[in-house]
Length: 142
Image (tube, rainbow, N blue to C red; front, side, top):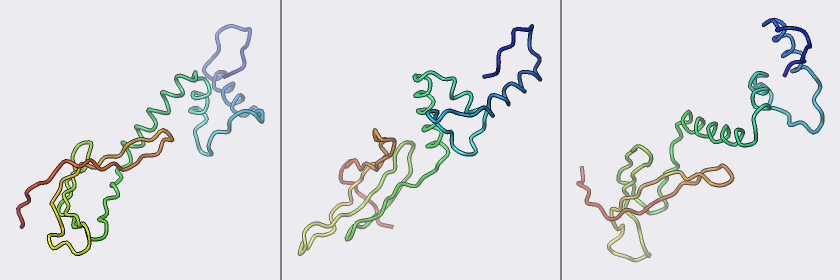
């Protein structure tokens, strides 16, 4: 925010100068320090937001990050498992795999079974991979 003058309307140049002056004003030790490289204009916009609007901004920023980051789900077979097929769908990944059971089972591996794998947001902002068992599936061997 710029310094308020008691004179008439301000020119664009005076507004710009006052923005620069305010961005160079010393911050108090209690003020949050923005990350290095964050544009001053964005810092000023964020500082003017209400707590409710800041929360909405955080939610939107997280959505943007998920949109921009094309992360592969960590789908690694456990020992003895046989992944038959992995198919990407909108909102989930379909995994078909065969599973072992106890040692000495003559019918192992069992299945194939189909799972839908998604990422679930956690309260701390992190995500957790979630496997949903769908059921047994018939797979034509190639």
